[in-house]
Image (cartoon, rainbow, N blue to C red):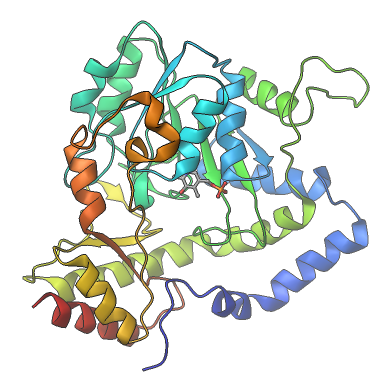
Length: 367
Ligand SMILES: *Cc1c(COP(=O)(O)O)cnc(C)c1O
């Protein structure tokens, strides 16, 4: 069998080429390249998709996080609680405000923030809690929100991997004061370049985000406060409007493929992703856990099957965070996961027989 990539952006483009080409041509004809009507239209569509009143298009998932942290007024002396097994953007944007990331370990099964450790991590300096809906599954927001409310702390959902993910019918973005999404091309809703968005149900937060993401001005003349150039481009918005119409279909197919993998792995020495009861996991990454990961990766490479590790080094052990004083062993669940996780190919254009081919290769390698 030919090469099986982790995701196949070319196949996706081929499947919607005429819609995409028309959408991009419209932006070229209008010359509305930064913010403008295409961005406004997509903001409305994405807010509706999330069933929320506001969405502010921005230049990436990273700038989305930084924008929210700036809007919350984070600064030196503040602490922000998050998890160590996330993409480096979650924590670098906390550091960039001058605040300090404080980590809590994750749940063994879901690898999402473990609320059991949350209370003990809260101090008088804590200013926000940032759960990450890792791999496309919503964290235990019922418990996290109970604790946050008791301490009157704002929660920001890093939903970069969780477009359309739900728990008990409630979509990502509904729990916190704001939620950030990434449209990096490899995410399940991907632009043709960098892009991101912030959603919120809070009118004041929406106004602050809009102001800050465009230099702190609403009229290009009067600057109300120093802001950023974190605006979304028209071409990206037009591409995203087209793709958003396909997202639920793609998510259904992702879920089917994940279920197919799960059945094929039943009884083997492989831990497939654990979907919480009442959850709609969107499988941005299909992450299994195996004991001999290096061996499995190598065997798959021999078969031309691409794999990846999201993420091999927990943040508290990264060089950039050395001065925070964390040690190996501080977060055993996250560290143990980092040694065993392996992301397998999964994309909506993938055929069942390709899943079977990948599964066979993994099963042979773990025997
Ligand atoms: C991708 C990602 C980001 C950053 O998004 P970009 O659009 O790449 O800047 C932030 N957090 C998480 C959890 C991510 O997966």
